[in-house]
Image 1 (cartoon, rainbow, N blue to C red):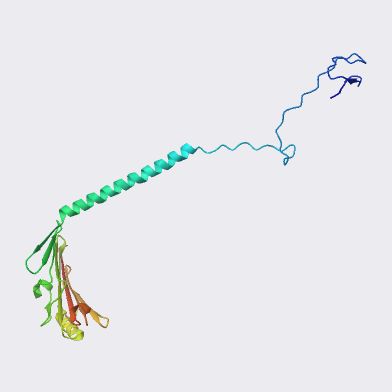
Image 2: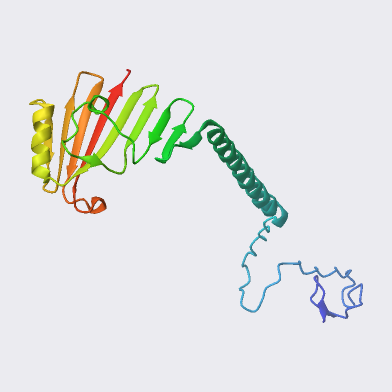
Amino acid sequence: MANFCTKCGATLNPDTRFCTRCGAPVESQPIAATGPVYTSSMQPGTVMPAPVPQSSGPSAVKIILIVVAVCVGLGIIGAGIFAFTVWRVAHTIHVSSTGPDGKVTVDTGSGSITASDAQTFTASDLGVDIYPGAQNGHGSLKMDLPTGSMITGVFVTSDPKDKVVAFYKDKLGSQASTFDAGNSAVLSVNKGEHESVMVTVNANSGQDDGKTRISIVHTKSTK
């Protein structure tokens, strides 16, 4: 590539140090500045974007491992609490079965629950008279707890529902409330602040060969 004298404009050879016409020293040509490398699709003057730092793989893995460890730890703690609760319940509740009637008694530590299909309750136990001629049914229950007691007596009779309802309306008195829904009726009365009686009468009970089912619940509270 030919050079030119900056003083007189004469053409100079590349290796000439002084102009052959005027004798002026030849100045060195400026070196092209190094700029960004452009691809064929980029225009000169385009600013190259700064490289985006890549996310740290090991840090993300550590976070995931920490989360997994916390979840596993919480699961172990929950399982331990559940196992301890089951152990406490198993060592607190005692179940015993005595007698030919299959009576089952559950001792909860703070009271007892007794259930038997052949268990017999009196009118005093139930807080109201038993329907005349009714027989014991399935589901009788007695609960004795520190807060009071609850006795459930179940009976069946061949008499129609309306006749049974009329009997208990008379026995419970005018203060009793009655809810009649066709095939079933509920009569209830409060005897003071800590005692109540509820009588449920179901007609054509499927579990009693179509007979009328009578459930009497007598509740007493010590508080």
